[in-house]
Amino acid sequence: TPFSGGRLVSDVVGGAYTAFQPGATLLAEAMSGVPRRVPVLAQMHEFVAEYLGIPRHEFFRRPETMVPAMLEVEQRFGLDVASISYDVYNIEAEALGQPLAWTEQGMPDIDRSAPLIRDRDDLSRLCTPDFDGAECCQRVLRMHDLFRKLTGLEPSLSVCAPFTLATNVRGIEQFLVDIRTEPDFARALLDRITDEVLVPWTLHQQRAFPGAGRVSAVDATASPPIVSLEILRDWVVPPILRLRNACAPGVCTANWVGERFLSDPAAMLDLKLLVGPGSLLGQDPDVETLGPVFYKQYALRREVPLVLGVGAAFLAQARPAAVAERVRQYVETGARGGRFALYLCNLAANTPPENVRVAVDTAHAVALG
Image 1 (cartoon, helix red, strand yellow):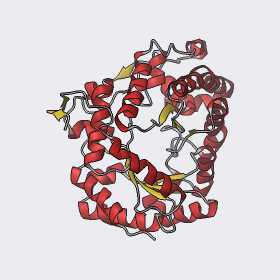
Image 2 (tube, helix red, strand yellow):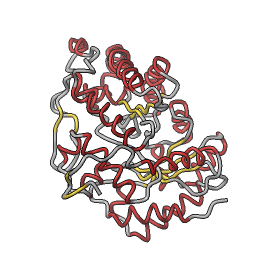
Image 3 (cartoon, one colour):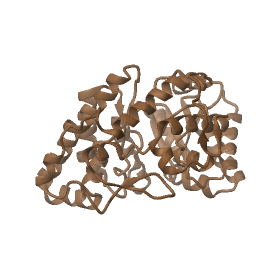
């Protein structure tokens, strides 16, 4: 292993993680039919940093540490799909000059006490960053480049979705107030963020990695109970579609949660498919509350593949036997007839490694057909 005391002690040789290539094929097979086993993927940057004892600042600021660390841990735990997740919500905001706040225990976050956009006059701050000069943007490109060298696979690109970026530079509560009291200003903010920042940054990444198919526009803020179904429909969806139309059909958003709060959760799933990657993602606690059968029936009705996500809080707190039971339930329901993958939601730093192992092994052990 290239790790010693959490430090990268030698440059990992190119192609060290080509063993993930069959997993990419497995995922493609699983999305279109019945694979030989259910593929498991995970978001695990916080877990990886803790598991290998890497200081957070080094982990999130040094791709040469972070990328092989993530691939190493994903491989050790038997995940099928190689992926790199990082502090994706900060990149564009940081490039615009938004201050960040660090904690020792986790990745950096927006400094919520110092929003970049305090009033209408600040809209002029939203101009296209110098992507070649912005260290945060160069860091992302280095991550993708390392990922490709180490796995031989094309990276998945990411940007912050328009609505979440607006709430990050304006403040969540303030932007929700703007929507109600100054809708013209709120619309102008979203338009500028999309046209001046996200479209050029997406195109910049696509030029650097023309083989990358998907661009995930990640949208953490855009979930009930923070937003209503009406705000999702009228304020969150249109700028995502605007970004997609300006860049490529591969631009998609999959990570909204909170349909369990709605009287008609299927109405939110309809919107998910409108902006999604062609598959449906349901995550705990929504799946736990509404049941995996609800999601499977919806996916069959709409003829789309299904990905079910086992929750981070559950994986951090549950006994291994309970983890195995939930994974078995989700996989047996979701994989019936094929077109299914299992996702382990953003694994917390304090997740017991045993729970990760049990989740992966249980999913792999379910007989398909």
